[in-house]
Each structure stands twice: as structure tokens, then as C-alpha cells.
Length: 205
Picture 1 (cartoon, rainbow, N blue to C red):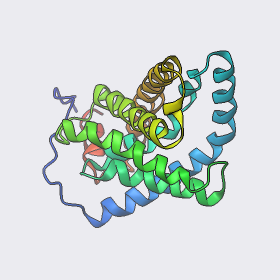
Picture 2: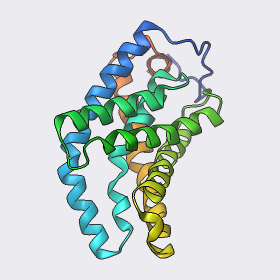
Picture 3: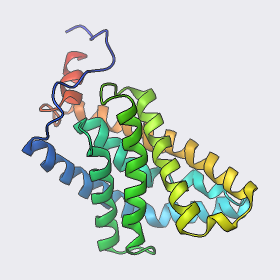
Picture 4: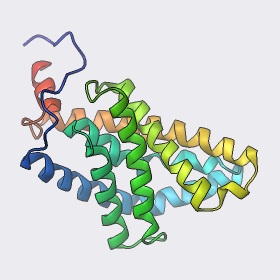
């Protein structure tokens, strides 16, 4: 088969199907387990980068932002990014981590950040550029939450500027581009055959 010359796909319906809800739940649980595994590695990386340059710890946060990106890329319906990121955050909190219930607040803010980007593109474009922007949007959501709710507003302008920049970069790469690659890999297995992401992969085979 020949490759589709159009790298992006317009979704035909924004109505949620049962399969969309099921896959959102499955993705959320799976990514929640990834979050749990990343808590130790990412936490050490975060602290190490912050010790090197205060605020630079944000460079380690991207993996915690990936749920919204993956959810949006796979399901391509309004609310998918928020739902998957929040489910993942709930799973991480229930398994146990250092942040407890505040993990869910973070998941909501990060999911909303990614969701806003998909909404700005009217849920019609899902290439690597949009994925990177969604990851950066999730990073911006994390920054805003921590700025107003977790005391970063009292920290220096320099800290907050470095933290924001590192979150945007980490979100774009570790959540956005990596998330896009993961979805493409999953689609290539046929697991997403009932979704536009899977059908795109089949046309390009």
C-alpha cells in the first residue's frame, strides 16, 4: 500500500463510543504504572538537576506528562487527554507515592494543558508537531498549578523562568514526541485498529 500523503486525519465524530471509554481506562491504568515506576528515577533526576541549577529539575518531569498526550493522540475526542492523565494520576496515587492526593490535582492540570492544545487544533491534527505542543501544554499546566498552589509564586523570577522553560522542553520531548512514537508503535501492532491512529498506520504500511 502507498503512504497517505496527508499526515493528519480529520476525525468524523466527537461522540464517545464504549470502546473509547474502555481504551481510555486501559491507557490510564498502564500509564499510571509507568508513573509509579518513574517516581523513583524521575525523582532522583529532578533533585539532581535542581541541585545543579534551581528550577532545572523540570527537565525530568516530561514522563509524568505523557498520559494526556497519548490519550489525545489515540482517542482524538474532547476530554480524552484529561481523562487519561487523571486516571493515570489516580492509579499512581493509589499505588503509593510521595505526593498522595495532590498527584490527582497535578494530573488534572497537566491533562487540561494538553487538552487545550488538541482543542486549539479542533481535534483534527495529530502529527508530531501537535504532539510536542500538547506535551509542552501539559508542562505549562504543571507550572501554573505549582506556581499558584504549591508555593512557587514565592520563589524567584529566575527559578520560575528556568522551571517553566525546562518543563516546556521536557514536556515537548518526553511527553510529546515520545508519546507520538509510542502511539505509532502501538498502532503498528494492530492494537488500535478501531481508532484513526491505527488506520493511519495501516495505510502507511
